[in-house]
Image (tube, rainbow, N blue to C red):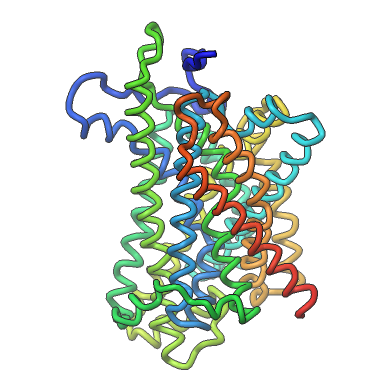
Length: 446
C-alpha cells in the first residue's frame, strides 16, 4: 500500500488556552522562513537550564572541576537527537507523542505512562519552585517558606498570556533566557577559567563509572538536561507554525522544509543551552574547586562565596538574578507540558490556569515539607534528587518516541533512516542502562 501524508486539521493541536499560530511566509528568502520557525526550540531549551541544572552543575564543578563537562556535552547531544525526533513526529503525523500513545497503546499502559509523565513534571516543578524561592531569598532576603508560597502566584502570568498568541510567550522566554546568558557571560569573564583545562573537560572521562558519587552527579546532570516532558511538549508546539496552505494538499517538499527549519531551530536553541550549562559548571569549577572550596554543594553557598572569591559584589547579584530568570522561564513551559500530557493521554481538557494550580499544589507541598524539615541546607540535595527522578522517568518517554518515529506505517517515507534509528535506540538504552547502574550503586554499594 502506498503511503500518503496524514489528513490534518486546519489548526495544529496545541493547548486550548494558547491561541494563534505563526504564519510561515510562502515566498521570500530562506532566512525569513527560518525566523518564522524560530521559537519552539527556545521554549524547549529553558527546561535544559532550570534550577535543577544549577544544583547539579555547581556541585559537579566544585567537587570534580571541569571533568563533568563531558557529561554536559553528551547530554546535550542526546537532547538534540531526541528533540529532532519530536519535530519529525509532530510535523508528519499532526499529533503529539501523548496523543499517539493513547492511539496506539492499551488504556492501562496509557494510564501508567501518564502517571510517570506527571511525576516528571512535578519533579521539574519542584526544582523551579525551590530555585525561584532561593533566588528571592538571596536577592531580597525573603524567607524560603514565603518564597515557596509566592511561586504559586505565577499562575497570574499564565492568565495574562492567555489569548496573546505564541509569539508573546516566546518573546517573554527569550528575554529571560537572554538575562541568564548575559549574567553568566559576565561571570565567566570574572572567574578567568583555564581554557586549556576546560577543553580537556569535554573529553571522555571513564572514571565516572568507577566513582559512585561522580556517577550520581553524572546521572543528575543527564536528568537535568534531557527532560521527559519536553519530548511531549516539543512534538505539540512544533505544530504552531502554519507552513502549508490548509486549502491545498500537503506538499512533501513543504513538509521536508518544515522539518529542516524546525530541527535547526531546536538544534540552535539547545546549543545555546549547552553554552549556559557549561558556563555554570565552568564558573563553579574555576571559582570553587581550584580555590579549596570543593564542598560547595548548595546554590546559596555559591552565592555567598562568589563576592569574596571574585572580588566584586556584582558577581553575586548577577548570579541571583540569573537564578530567578531560570526558575521563572522554566515554569511557563511546565504549564504547557502538563496541559499537553493530560489532554494527550487522558483526552481531558481543563483550563490552563486550573492545570497550573494542580501542578503547583502537588509540587509546593513537598517543597514546603523539605524546607521545613531540612532547612536551607537541604535545598541542594532536593534539587539534585529531583533531577535523578527525572532521569528515571526518561525511558518511559524515549522508547515510545523512538518506536513511533521509526515506524513506517505511522511516518511513511519520513520514518527515521536506519542510522538515525540506531543512534536513537542507543541513546535510549544508554540512559536506561545508566539508571540501572545508579540504582545498583545506591542500593548495593551504599
